[in-house]
Length: 19
Image (cartoon, rainbow, N blue to C red; front, side):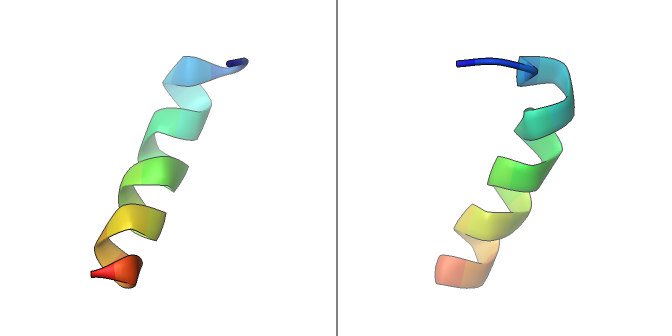
């Protein structure tokens, strides 16, 4: 993984949208 700090928010938003 790369840019964990910056990608963390993006992944979180994507996860919520998938729900």
